[in-house]
Length: 293
Length: 295
Image: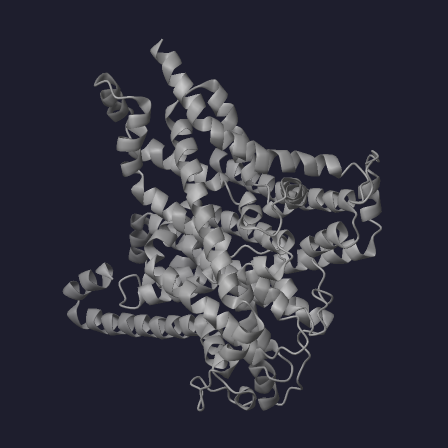
């Protein structure tokens, strides 16, 4: 837009026309993007709206955004038929524990791999990178038998087994340490007689707060949306995560879309709210995945 | 002496993480490779070594070939739908960075990427529903007969592609936005002075400059689409509780062989096929990037 302004000072008349034209284009782009954004979230908006509809209203055409006769019947019958609160609790507990484990392991390993230039550590780093490209689905069957051998199937610990470490997390912390913590800082602390552990705890960790925050959000959502692993590890109704619970609930005989929507909405609304609050962290974390060199 | 002390700290600090890593990542990966060469049904004690027999059988297995075809169609369909759309949307959002609504655009395009798979799939299940769904109602409004979207083998693959693209788009847009922000402004100024229109600048400057990003986004989208499972499970399951009968995908076929047919070695060989696909895609990406760097 700087160019239009520059042009307008040279040729006031032509520039004015150009500016109105530019504004018109910008306005139409805004209209298009606005429409597109609405379209993207519309399925979810309708899902929430459907949750409050009676079976008759579900059939209405065109579908109404705000139910004319809102009812809580769907929620009531879902709560009566399924241990939905328990599933949500399982998911929250699993995601939180996984987040804590990933943040701790990534922080330590990432720092050590960034600032301790020993050859043995380089080999470890290459191994970490190499496993990063292997999709979880590839090795989850042997992992299942490990969980079975430990006797942790159908439990939080079994779920957690698959989500204790994150190659990308180690990588993210390593990059951050390399770029934002100068060697001189650590050397100065060492000369002052600080122990290695003290340096990590008092100097490195506070400087990594931003990166670890982004990683925490990523790790939480990764566990929250995991599907295949919880699907094979949990087989009892009480140990399901919300994803598995809902997926199996919807295959039932007598389940109608109203109740499915109610159950889904009960899960969606809190997680979207959480996302909107943590958006900055999340975007930072995801964006940094694209900046791998 | 000092060096040795630091080395000891480094090893002690990384050891627990490394141990976990070896235990829940490296061991199962190696075990997958090993099992793929053995015949093992959970019930029997011995696992005879069968060499490549599992793989040979795979390529005559109609169900597996069907799953492989479906998954490939879905993966490439998602990329073709997602990547160009994401580039245009990101370009437009970048152009309107100073708009009051740019935060809203970014957030709403990204939300489908973070919501849990199953509830999101449920929303689309309603849209595609043959009797209740708005899609059929809309088609009938225009005089097009209603389709059994989720029960027709071809149409249900299309439905899965739409659902997966809807979810993948946010991630691609985000990465493109980072790319647009890193493009040199001077280039656009020069193009503007030469009288290039906005569309021309996008086509002749942004698109070629963003090639590495396009490559990265395409490969990441492809790889994650090859692992499609939840979407197929929810969308293509009928009310009779027969999940995924309509659209067989790789992960589903693998899990079924392992846990329903108890053929773990055979399932592991499917996992190895999946891994090979991912590896080949990654190598292509690295190869193309390096080639670009050399120029």
